[in-house]
Image 1 (cartoon, rainbow, N blue to C red):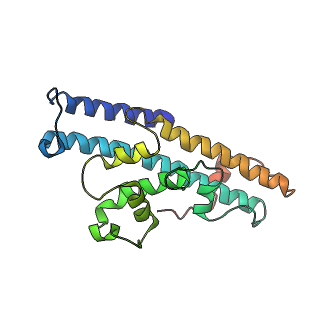
Image 2: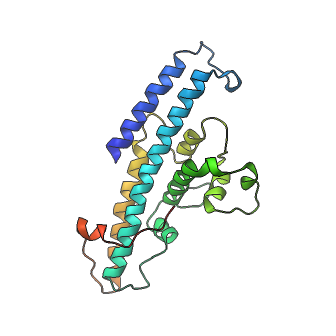
Image 3: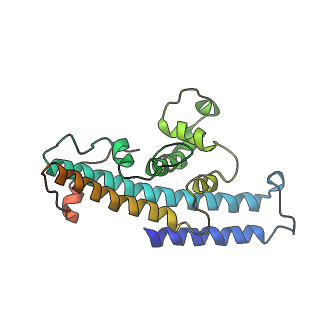
Length: 209
């Protein structure tokens, strides 16, 4: 995952360099973007969005594994089963929103995948149909405009072209989450061994979007 994310960042950098090569010394304002500029920006947005979706896939796999560990422990109540609670467990917090950074990655991936289905009034508030919409508003992500995905990336203190820290965030959380669950097991007198790949594949499906 880290290597793939790093490669996506390199491709984004190449696209940005192509755009910058057409600009003059003072750059180009958003109102003066050419069709070529808009294309380059859109490519970068898709590359960043792909990195978030890749991270989301790892989160989804991790949620399924925890649910499988819960089954191994006899469906005990001290192991979370809810997706949101699992994403919060052992996760670093985003200072400005107070949310789990893992939950933000999940919401940003959903934002990238579904924003084309939204209307402007969907983000008007004060209530929202989906948590993803509320997160988009909190992070200042719109339906239209330029550089939304790049802005989302910066909210997690990750910057193009090096998007590997996004993957590192999820990979480190996954390891911390597994350790957290095992420590819960020891505290409750239930040893939980690591799952083999074929067991993880048989875990209950995650119902994330």
